[in-house]
Image (cartoon, rainbow over all chains, first blue to last red; front, top):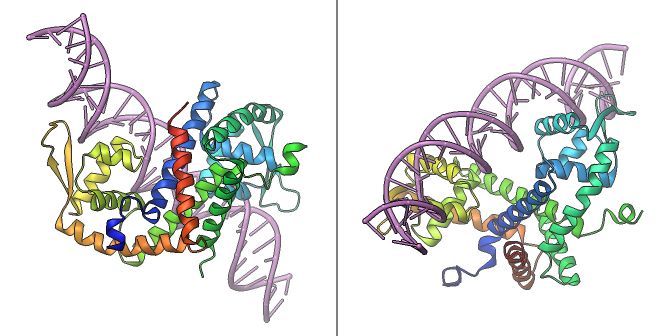
Length: 152
Length: 152
DNA sequence: TGAACATATTTGCTTTGACAAATATACTTT
DNA sequence: AAAGTATATTTGTCAAAGCAAATATGTTCA
């Protein structure tokens, strides 16, 4: 009875799905914003630029881990973004295996445009949560993430 | 400076990313569970079966909307699941355009196995949240979802 | 009724991303 | 220093998913 009778309202049953739905909406909204500005950028590419703009130059594999992207896929995304002139592959000073990916001037200029989109989407997404709730949601998600990663 | 100094702790900045990371971990964990049982099922296929098991027969497009999957992709997933004998495409009584997708006996039997995997992963994911917090997380996510969908 | 439009499914085409192999470089241990 | 192991990047290959077009059926409205 416990599980069956509560089926359609039990949180546990749909956390995975729910996360998928929310994320899909955010991606959709974000890509809509980008398209509306006439920018031809995927959500993945947006994330890469955001990371670089926020944290500065880093290697391709750091970047890949940060956005949960396969190394091979990262290479190809970097190809595209480099071709569009938004970033540069430089040599890493300490490690000759690695690259140092850095934004070009065009990349930095682009980011100033993206900040708006980013802001609008996240504000819209969280508009029904007050400040404290937003912090709490973030905290819960972090805790879930750690629980999943530290298997014990 | 303002953005730079706060970058690594501002919640709003990473909600999109964070959702992606959590979801990726859940998918990984779930596929691990499935593989451990010797089942050759993708996370997407698991979601389709789950939906059918929980809510009963429905059309392909309802199913597609529920798991946030493209119609074309759904057709091909159904091909696979039908070939494996887990579901059946029947005619829809009221709408001759549509299908009525229903689980076979084998599909229902399979689901009894999947229930465990599902349970284990979700329990592990939420083990650092108490009952009230789990409910609250779910509530927050629903509110974010609605905020994103009802654009106004 | 009939025309216009909307929805359900399938198929073809293209892009994205995962996985594995290849190569280059770093680290560790003996 | 040599050997063995680990990491960074690139490339090839494949499966999954998105988009568009085709077809069939339903719905609305003049």
